[in-house]
Amino acid sequence: MAKRRRRRWRHRSNAPPLGVLPALAAALLLLLLVVTAPVDAAGAAGVQRHLERMNKPGVRSIESADGDIIDCVPRHKQRALDHPLLANHTVQTPPSHMPASLLVRQQSTKSATARAWQTWHHAGHCPRGTVAVRRTTAADVLRARSLALFGRKDAKQQRTRRRRPMPPDVVTGNGHEHAIAYTSSPEGVYGARATISVWSPAIEEANGFSLSQLWILSGSFNGSDLNSIEAGWQSFMVYCIPVLRVDQAVFFSGRQVSPELYGDSRPRLFTYWTSDAYEATGCYNALCPGFVQTSSRIAIGASISPVSSVGGPQYDMTLLVWKDPKLGNWWLSYGEGAGGLVGYWPAELFTHLSDHANMVEWGGEVVNTHPDGAHTATQMGSGHFASEGFGRAAYFRNLEIVDADNSLSAVPLDAIQTLAEDAGCYDIRKAYDGGWGAHFYYGGPGHNSASCP
Ligand SMILES: *[C@@H]1O[C@H](CO)[C@@H](O)[C@H](O)[C@H]1NC(C)=O
Ligand SMILES: *[C@@H]1O[C@H](CO)[C@@H](O)[C@H](O)[C@H]1NC(C)=O
Image (cartoon, rainbow, N blue to C red; front, side, top):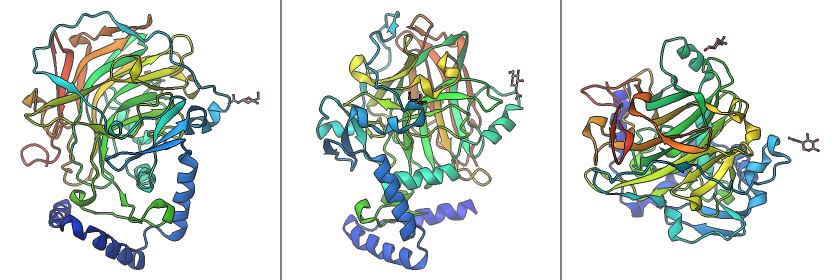
């Protein structure tokens, strides 16, 4: 059955030339409105209201070449502060001390890598006192709704899985699959850092996604009190096609639309958090409030470029999450140094993480939307297996954790364990060298005739 679906996809990918698109879209719109009307007028108005709540007016708006709009929102009017727990919250200034690395890095033996950055920076900057916010679109809202049904991080399944003697990981089940490295520390973990290569993995299905991220975890894996802070890059398939602009309140859902035509698998910076094992709290980016942004330069949800290519240049980005020892907020930085501070998850949001974390994970996660049939060909990382190594497989390098004294320490290789639930689809290999410290390659193509039916 899934095979049939795949064939239909291929058929649709015989794409008409781009010039035909507007006419085709209009025809499709009429057809869908008449025949199926998947999002009716009331639904569209609901989405419109939701968008108005989410998108705070900016003092300036920047149109990025990738189609995103970045609004420069006054810092104290950002959406995060709508969270009920943050009713009396004052936006913090960055802590005076970022965790420092005690390690003097050796020159890497790998060929040079370069930094990936945010695409919209080519189009302008936000003024001081504002935060750069990617404007949420109707497609984002509809995708989030479908993820709530499809890709839900299902706590019940998680508990079921926990009965098996398996290494920790947060969200197996319901099609979620991982290739991750993890470490834990009895003394507690106060943050983590890694440099992550950036790719644009192919996503086979609408509703599918592919993430490369780090997790900072605390609480028990068997209960409903798991606290998780997550950040990384994600690629996803757009779920619907906004045919007309949102302010005209007309859209339709585009199930089964060829990704070649409408897909957007550009990698985007994301943040996520939950304080109750994914049951009631937690969501991506600014779709629900919580993560307080301080940066006027880095927008959550904005696309990252350039991306790495197989056999070509490798682009990577450094993420650091750490707990401010004074106020207890968990800060995120993207890139090097204080200029890369993005914002923080306020201490008020969490239970266990208000103290410290007990585990860190790094790696990839995909949603396979056919968990009971043939595996999807959604890629993780570069879409190549770990064994293919530098230049072909995606990597995380220089794995470090933050200690109680707010310093970074390199994680010894033997303190890192790895997990790949279905290594025929996606796998992981850890290694060590002087320049890259503890690092790993990970990923894979998903469906393939040799090892992932
Ligand atoms: C905010 O402050 C008001 C007035 O002091 C108080 O009643 C309320 O509980 C506070 N809310 C939170 C979330 O701390
Ligand atoms: C969860 O696991 C911990 C030990 O790891 C145990 O003490 C606790 O009773 C367990 N809780 C549940 C609800 O099973």
